[in-house]
Image 1 (cartoon, helix red, strand yellow):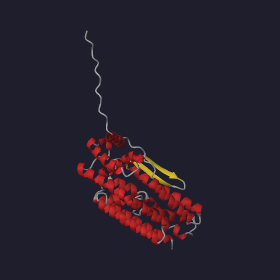
Image 2 (cartoon, rainbow, N blue to C red):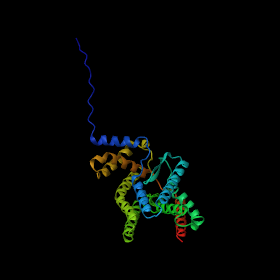
Image 3 (cartoon, rainbow, N blue to C red):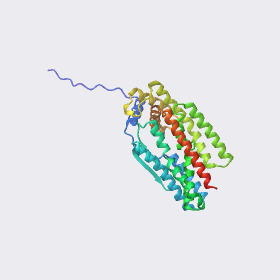
Image 4 (spheres, helix red, strand yellow):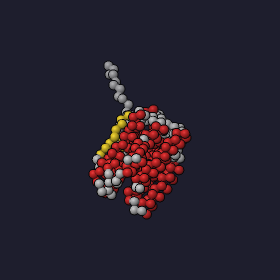
Length: 318
């Protein structure tokens, strides 16, 4: 009597740790985007500005209310532009005594749209405050609320146009001038950070010194990530910003770069840092600068906005 043999499934070879890491990174970057978290660095910067502002003003309540109004107008400007360009998951985080941040998502936003979203933050505040400065506020006493609101709005938004990486000015400079010039970008940030750090020490502008130091600390890591993104672009061309449209070959190359860069962090942080770096590499490798005409137009508007705001600010002090 013949006994039927039951076939056993062949044992699969064990998956290596490197392959598991790649699969985890691939699945994470391909997952549907979730609403962005609040930018803690920017909130801390705004918080420091708020504390220094209130510490150096006599009308604490009025100054605080003016600062909160200026912050809300700034972030609503970003949010308004996002809505016009079809961004998803728009929201404005507002924390009393802390700050506010507008967020939104659109993976396929054009370079010009991204730049305009940045510019629309300080634009409404500077325009409105300049109109007040040249009309109503200039004739009022310095302790009046309208004068304080105008002055606060101008200072906040002009500060936002300074070329710090965490602020509008720095992000515009990167997108419009240095997107495809990694060496020029890093050199500009380094020279600017050193110059501002010297100025902060020379004139005891400690808040400015904090921002300058943060900018300098970010330069080496941003250089490495941008170098990795440039390597991906050189190998595969301009890639899609949507990770689920990328081939396994591209994703594996992105993961390899991210894994190397994540080794600089402590072991418990590496899995999340590997994912975050991979997402940033994909973002940088997929983005291009706006065309020359759009870049010049946006830079011109930014320059005019800053000059008008400075003139309005000076006029308040007369």
